[in-house]
Amino acid sequence: MNQPISVGAAPTPFRFDPATTALVLIDMQRDFVEPGGFGETLGNDVSILQAVVPPLKAVLADARERGLKVIHTREGHLPDLSDCPPAKLRRGDPSMRIGDPGPKGRILVRGEYGHDIIDELAPLPDELVIDKPGKGSFHATGLHDSLVEAGITSLIVTGVTTEVCVHTTVREANDRGYECLVLSDCVGSYFPEFQRVALDMISAQGGIFGWVAPSSSYLSALAPADSPTTA
Amino acid sequence: MVDTSTEDLPQPSTQMSDSARWSVGPVAATPYSWPYDGSVDTRHLAVICIDWQVDFCGRGGYVDRMGYDIALTRAGLPATARLLAHARGTGMTVIHTREGHAPDLGDLPANKRWRSAQIGAEIGAEGPCGRILVRGEPGWEIVPEVAPVASEFVVDKPGKGAFYATNLDLLLRTNEITHIVLTGITTDVCVHTTMREANDRGYECLILSDATGATDPANHTAALRMVTMQGGVFGAVAETDDVIAATYRSEDA
Image (cartoon, rainbow over all chains, first blue to last red):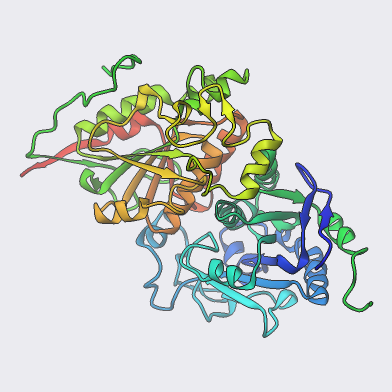
């Protein structure tokens, strides 16, 4: 049995056992993160999300080396949009709707180039990829069953965007009893104000949704632990 | 007028005639006129009142006795009472939620218990109004100003979201509800979590800025603004009177 790791975090140290912990990368998809994608066509500055990639790449490499379970999620819909609620499809007056042809293929449709995860963080064949029709990663997916099956009780949460899909997933996970550590520099929002407020909301009231720490604290807490390459 | 006395439970202020049919919309809302599909027959519309419980917003409840200012969590009560009277008179479905746990705490996740203890309010411990967040205790009850009347649904939930581990989705689908108006506390925690869950399930949601509230006013404002981004990522925001003003008698059967 591994020694529990303790990470300096808000509002209290976050303790976890790597054997029962998964790294979750939320919606690091080309359409949200890359220049020329759907997110940018909506008028968003994607450079803010690009800043998430280098630290997240380091966290992902570390997790793979240690054998942590790695889970990727993608938001998207079936090509016939049969799993897209009318309220989501038809709401408001955007320049482009889900299913429309976009710069990187049909917007938010599974199998399209823009729907897939960016090359820097591409999943390995043995890593779980959860396709989700909503903002949360638990609703209408097999994530909870997969976590139970794997004996996972703690989640290291990363990805985009902080106040939408990351927050919804953390709220779902918290209600289900999972302990979540959100890595502050590995989550990103198009809106700096929401980045700050959303992180504060997670650790408020004694950590009402979970814990928050920079990836440097997380990685340095892991470093002194037994590495898989030493006896 | 709505009876807001604490002596009696509120009663429907208007008796709906069997033949009357009502619709709502378009409501003047941000960032779009709600709902997305123009209007909704009140038979398909639910008002969901989140966690208006004594321990959170009642005089003598937990938050009050700990010396915090309950004015912030009570701020949305008058508007909610007004909305309830309106909803009861126009055929809307009304659903109330309560956060709480079984007396043996068998449905309380270990980390939730631990964290509540860290801030001095351990779930299950004796509080000023009975055991904190335990079903059946006085502090867990809904405050009289917005208490349920007979025939209204009450959903007991163990988490922040009203969908997880409850029958809410079944109630909504069985009663052919497609549109939801949200009131309650707190805006950024339980109301937002429920709105996110409802939105992912395809319900068209409207959150009322004057019928919600948070312990931190900045979080109330930020949570409402989050809803309005990206064309209404979780739905739309309006005030109670906007809903009342947009309700009209659509036809007589």
